[in-house]
Image (cartoon, rainbow, N blue to C red; front, side, top):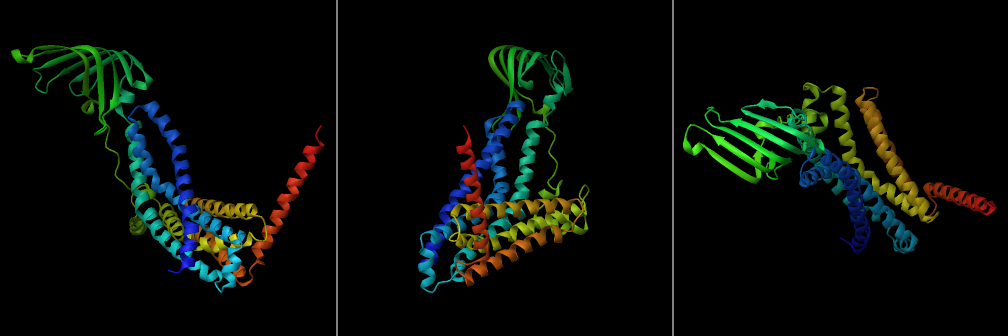
Length: 398
C-alpha cells in the first residue's frame, strides 16, 4: 500500500468511525426511551432493556454504516480540496481514479459486512427483539389477577390480593392457598404486601412476599409447620408462565437471505409472493449500495472548491437521505404489489449508481469545472441570497 493510500484511508476512517459511533449511540438512546417506558409500565429488570438494545444494533448498523461511510469519504476529500492538498496530489500525476482505489476497497469490505448484517444478523436479532417484547408484554399475570378476586386457574394454587398497584407489580393484602400434587399437604400463606418481578437468570416471574405467615398442614408431623417471614419468594412459572413465543419465520423480515430465496416458490402460511420478493430485492439492493458511495462522495467533495463546504456537505447528505427514502418507498410499493421490485428498487439503485459514476468521471476529467460544482455554485448563491434577505429584514425591524 502506497503512502497516499494510507494517508487517504486515515483521513476517511477516523471521521467514519466517529460518525458511526455517534449515530449508533443516538439511535439506540432514542429507542431506549421507549423501551424504558415499556419496562416501567409492564415491569421487569433493567438488563432486559440492554438485551433489547443489543438486538437492535444490527438493524441500526444497517442504517448508519452507509451514511457514516459516505460522510467519512466526503469529509476526507473536502479536507484535501480545501487545504490545496488535492492540487498537489493531482500535480504529481495522481488523479481521482487512482485516489479512488483505497476507498473503493473499503467499500467492497463494507459490502461484505452489509451482507452479513442483512442476510443473517438482522433476521435473527429482529426475531430475538420481538421475543423479548413478547416476554415483557404478553404475560398471563397482566390479565389474570384482579383486585379482591380469587384466581385459581393454574393447577392447585389460588391467589387473592386486596389491592393492586403499578400495573400488577405491587400487591397488598395477599392470600395464597396451594395443595401438593397428591392433595395431602396444604399450604396457606398470607402477607401484608408483595411485588412481582422477573428473575435475572431465566426471566421467570417471582412473587416476593413481605411481612407474612406461612402455615403448612399434612398427615405427617413433619408436614405441619408455621413460618413467620420478612420476605418469601414464590416462583410463578407454573401459575403464570408465558406461552412459548412462535418459531422464527412468522414474518419475511425474520428469514435469512438463503431462506428467502428458498421459499419463493414454496410460500409458508401467512407470507405472500409480494412480501418475499420485496424483502429479498430490498436486502440485495442495500447490500450492494455502498459500491457507488465513494464515486458520489468524491464528486461532491472535489466540487466543494467551486462552492462553500457547507453547501457541498448539505447537498451530499440530502442525496444520501433521498436515496434511503426512495428505497423505502419503492419497497413499500413492491410489497403492496403496485410496482415491480426491479422498478421500485433496482431502477433507483441504477439511477444513483449511474449518476454517481458520471459525476465522478466529469470531476476526474475536468478538475475544478465539474457539472456538480456548477450546481453547488448555484445552491451556494441561493443560500447567500436568502441570508442577505434575512439580514435586510432584521435591520428593517424596529
